[in-house]
Image 1 (cartoon, rainbow, N blue to C red):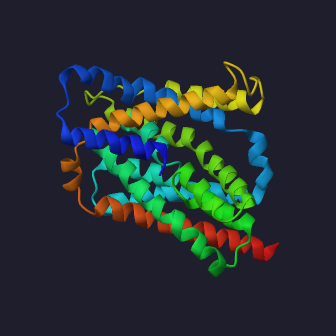
Image 2: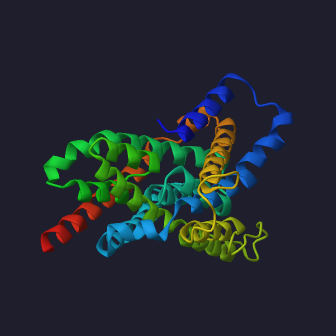
Length: 302
């Protein structure tokens, strides 16, 4: 169970037991907005162009196609199931890119109801946890070697922690390939959220809604951090080393997720129903089948 899931569940549990005091509201809003945005920006420190090159161009193409098709299909399914627009957008981004982190990033421009973020995170967490146990069982049935299995897990599972867990069940090689494949999906976070920001800005023009920047500042910071990490401009150790900065970003993300949990009522989630879970499951199934088919096709041609 990943740290983000733990803190959001603790927050939701505490909210269920105790009423939310009024004096805590400003702090919770701070955790959901500036703190979470800095946490998303810090994800760029986990990206390195050198690492991405290790899995080869065909693998990069497989992951990219799966991600782009997955997010578009996820949004389409959500519309067909008549989910609230904002909830459908969050589930689609979270399932296709990088789980809770992607949901948080998208929510800063989608500006969904507080409950929608928690529902989307819950759906992604549930499905990805099932995948941790399911994927190793399917590996021998699909005839995949460790490299292709890692590529499949990284291309279709939800959270980074889930991808690593599914890889570690098999081998160190599978874990390495799965992690790098997941980083390729994280690279798509900036362009997808930028697209959402532009779409939101167009829809809000002249309607009196809050103005949304076409290029949110945290996406700019995300790209800059990725460039700094790829070019090795910072030392790995030390006060301002990449190790400490990555750890700091993880703490910021945990604080933000706790804020989301504390502002979410479990009673509200019960009324949402099974449609969000079904939407996420259908999207996941498509991504798993598509990435598996592409991987096996490339293996057959090699």
